[in-house]
Image (cartoon, rainbow, N blue to C red):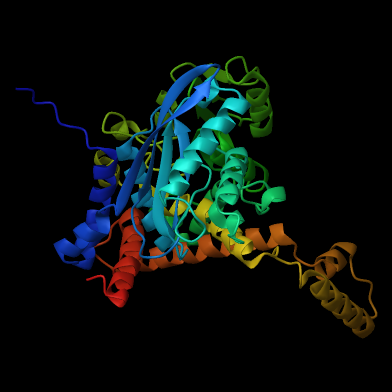
Length: 473
């Protein structure tokens, strides 16, 4: 008989993390089981003709909770997708929406595919067929289940899905709300592509506004100058890294990708690396940094802040004991396993958890969905009025002081907020207020010793009250 310990599945890992919060809240075990359980999971197998041959694809869409509608969550295209992963991610979406007060249930979808093997026309055929399967079986609509981009998908796929829904339901005037993350020209919202990465940065800024949090994590001073290692320079990692470097003065010392890692003690040029990846499809050969073939080893390098922004299960019991970062900011979903989280907690490493940190995407998806149902862009009615009021204020100040007002102040006073300004403002406010709720639980409950448990307490308290109010139990 083998003595090797069984590795927890992704779903089990998420559930164990939630169990800590159930214990703190002393919720009845039956109710806890009901909250953790997925409502429904659809598996579809469908054929598509590719280059004269029939290929059969497998996809999933899981609804974890419909206590609020619609249920919300991305669709990923990857070779690692399976039922367990989709259900775990759906559960995370339920908790994530509750933490940031977005009135959605949790859902997630995935297609088992390597997008790199297919050209644009093939991907369109596959995506539209997958969308039809979900729509016809009631797992995609503006009212009940709204996907968004995830790993391997983006604006292009969301536009195809929305158009497919429109053709199947031409009577639905709210058809653009059936997905979020669409191109702006097709009902999307400005700021959605950057939302998750920008949300990560807003979280870090709020954390460093609280001196007691900073000291407890072993830091002094502000966010500026901190040495940061980022795993994954995809959409989330790129926007987070670029903002941290250009606006917050952080030193990005390492970027870890699937084909290796780049290291430079004096700091990497994020934009230059991204441009190189776009051109060469790899970081190999990038000239202005030291290349490390075993990139994952750099998760263990000495740094102030580690941001895993790639995929789940990157920090495990095998490497958790060697992590040197004082602060881990989980930009990916589930990058730390439950077992590794236990090790890191015992070591006193501060972790800002995924269910909160990467909620910027669903927050701005909520703004986009509301915009689609309202059929008007944010700022359209009030922008010029605000500019006029600013002009009147400027004139009043000048007449009272008889002093010239600097040009930059004039510009700030007179300029009305456009949609992107409002989206960023709403995202910043959401991430800041959510951290303050989490911190309040962390500070006031002696049973809570980490931010992950505090986040789950915030989420589960809201979900359980919602269930009680509508009479689910």
